[in-house]
Structures are given as C-alpha cells and as structure tokens.
Length: 126
Image: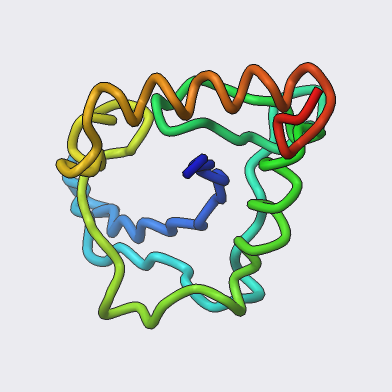
C-alpha cells in the first residue's frame, strides 16, 4: 500500500521576558498553535506543497497518490490531539516512524507500484 506524508506548518510562539535593568532573558511560555485555522500546508520556495513517500523522499504533489493524500490530509480529518505522536521531525529521524511490519518484499512491491504510477496509470496497468 503506497504511503505519503503531507507536511504542514504549525505556528510556535515563544514568549521571552527581558529584564530592563540587567542582562537577563527568560523563556516563559511556548504556545503551539493547533487549531484548524492555525494549520497551513508547508510549501517550498516555489509554492509547491511538500509531500514525501514512505522513505521520506520528496514526491510531486501532482502524482496520483499525492493528490489522494492531499485530499485526505485535511486537518478536519485528523485524529484527536491526544492521539498524535510527539517527537523529532519525521524528515530528520524518519526511522522513528517506520512501520515494523513491512518486509523487504513489501517495500519492493510499493516501489514497483510507484514506478508504474509515474509511468501514467495509477492502477499500474499498461
């Protein structure tokens, strides 16, 4: 089964109190904006949405499975906040988010299916 990661931005605001009388600054609050209206698709400098395959390799937003993922990744479809994973960025530490049940044969089949889609037909038919 093909997998796509759709990258979003979440605003993070950091409050810093700065002393007026001495050299002292202190972070007093960090707020992660998680309301639906705060969430934005992340884009590259050319304005293209950022999507990645199961190996965290960048894929085109115009690719068949990417279009499906973009549609399904709408924030209104996300699980409840309590069900989110927290940890390092999936692009930096991608191994943390790999499914342990995929076998090497499964990965090769997914790659072959992706190649067929790139050739034109999303079903992999000639």
